[in-house]
Length: 490
Image: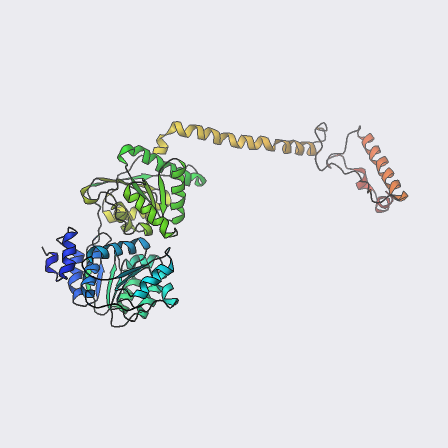
């Protein structure tokens, strides 16, 4: 088995690797480092967690050990899809370059442009950035990419999912044609393959078998859940999550809860907080300082539940996570393995529980197909909690009765209108109108019309035993039978 000492790394870099406690490279590292040190383009295909970061960081530091960066002209560029992954690359750079005098800058959103401009103006050897923030600096005239000698694209499949591919193509066009390119992706979608064929020159292709099985130390389970009604499914699903957490008791020391959408991340975190659970959200729309505080709190044990999206959780490395809850079935089956891999790390035991609703059953079938085994089913805790569900059902049954009783007066009015015998009920709004006097006009003709109207109204009431005219029914108001001339006189 090959060792790091056999990979022709800079002695100072090798010293940092040994101090970090590593002796043997992972398969992707053993395959990617030698051609990278030879100056060849590299196409690495491997899942997250296989050691890709060190596979480009170590040769990058070795190649940049000699030379000096000029102001606003970085010597190398590392592109990452998310702020968290970019920050993790920066941490790796600090770890392995501590004995080498190299400078770096981290360009990510949520941080002031002024601080980043100051670093760029001094000149940096390694520029680690997300595509959007990198182009922001370029368009402001603060960055020149003509001196980039090595360009790294990490997690290219996530770049595709997040819509960054046009930005990546533009950035490739801004860098020299003679640059060396190290390109890493978990999958090779047609769009990604097109980019590699366009921008990479005779790359060394290193492919590590896709991780299709989870660690044996992780206990898995799934709840097949269907809401009692479509409009209640979301709230009942959140209740199932709380009951699953409660069911784990003290064994659940901390947990990451994965949702597919950012909006659900916020809703689930808010719901857990409302019910007394120590939870906080993390996703791409949050301010960077807030995301950093949340991650630090979770790593330090100050925060028990981290509710995250796949994108924000990419590159998370928290050694002791007891549980992972998949609130949603992931859209891509490989993400399931990535998600549950956050627990059961370094030989520890872990548990992963997923909630599957009917619309996610196709994605769930893809997950089981990838794993090549069935995930054990767990009883729905909400269905077994009949004592808690009964009062809610009773309350729900009362609601329609109250609404019908509130409409009852209207039904009586209709009965009065349609049935002439029900004349003792209060008259409806449709009672035959009496002519209203017009106070603004006090002429004698108006007074005569008013008195005439009153006398006619009185005679009509006398004909029907003193009751008011109600509706049309069998009692047609007398004024309807008047001719046009008679109406004008009245």
